[in-house]
Length: 250
Ligand SMILES: O=C(O)CCC(=O)C(=O)O
View 1 (cartoon, rainbow, N blue to C red):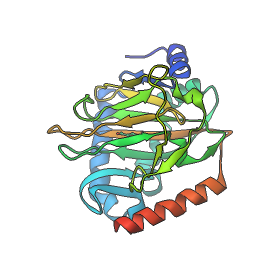
View 2: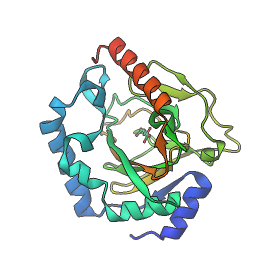
View 3: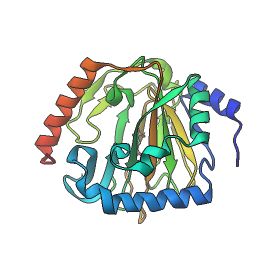
View 4: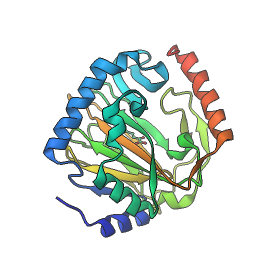
């Protein structure tokens, strides 16, 4: 079902996130699912440890992988999905450039929570303007770890984050936004639906205790005017290397 672009952009600007039903049609979804399985089987084994995470360290159920565009033509091409770009540019009110693509896998039974954070604490763009397109590959429910957004928290600016020592979610907001003004809102999706959120919107997700994986394919775009904060980025890389070494992943 086609959404109204202006209404979608207006909700995004007000709340810092918005749901887009059926961003992908059934054929696009089936193809994406097939390509992700192929990537896991054929490409992921040779991807460096800094771009793949497992629930229990360096092996076992897959938790997350990123920078797919570096290793695979199909995923490099995904950034050009016309409807996604149209919506991303309308929401941000400016033209966008791809940053990276990722899969948050949240495996059945053992998928752990995502700690509350703003994505720009990881991306380090100045100004901190960008948008995350999170596409559901599976039904997303409260029981399997839906992402929750703190409504309107993108207007709080970049918040202080602490170092958690967690290999994937290495930074988390020191104080979560006041729930009266910024209520935590779960986003429940059908396969092919997407949520779009601002790089500054605080969000987290719960564990997956169900019998089925809860997979989200994500494409991140920055506003074209946003540039990498080199100092923050170098500090982030050094910290990431330290926790990856400590966890035994590298
Ligand atoms: O999929 C999740 O559980 C977490 C997603 C997330 O943190 C993100 O898209 O930035």
